[in-house]
Image (cartoon, rainbow, N blue to C red; front, side, top):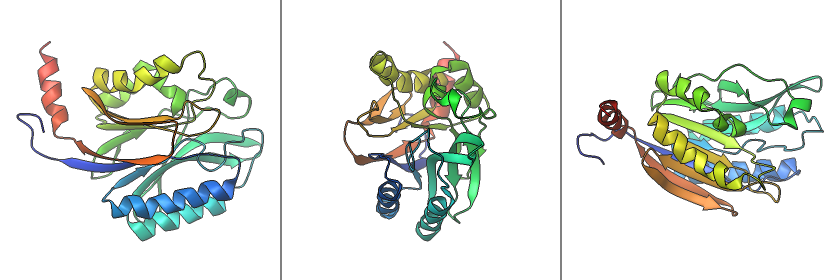
Length: 246
């Protein structure tokens, strides 16, 4: 805890999971993590973008799988963030879902800044917004969104304390190094916590991290695992006061 701050903590779980083209395997992995994370005291569990089905060229009805995640969220009384298609075969969006502890779809963010291959398949969504879930004021973006600093600055100005970024960071061979630098840069320049949750696969950067404005607090790379992090939200006003005089 920083001097001058009083504890207001949020415990999160960041699930670095292998995402394959096997929907049932992906869902099974997610359903195993939710009670594990809840048992560790996590209040929010974050999964990657495309965590159910990463095949852009193949539309699949994901409503039964989403219903299973809703049931797990309800049974374990946790908030859950995950990425999945929404719409139908003719009107698709790359969406990030936020489930509340009652299992309801509390919010759905449709990705705005689509990557090149995605533009052939998905429609862009509307700008993200800040959601006050009682525990914290959070925002959800996805993957390539983090390359747009003004987009995140708008969320910080709206009062976001934690920005979650489920990702499937493909085509990273040329820009893997700057992609790994962006989460901390976004946390520092906006004085927020930034949470990157990338899918693990042979096609992705496969790096997830929890960033405090002053440093990377936890990181996992090229392997499956669950990061459990305690975010001291009371530190953020102290930092904002400090840097406001710079």
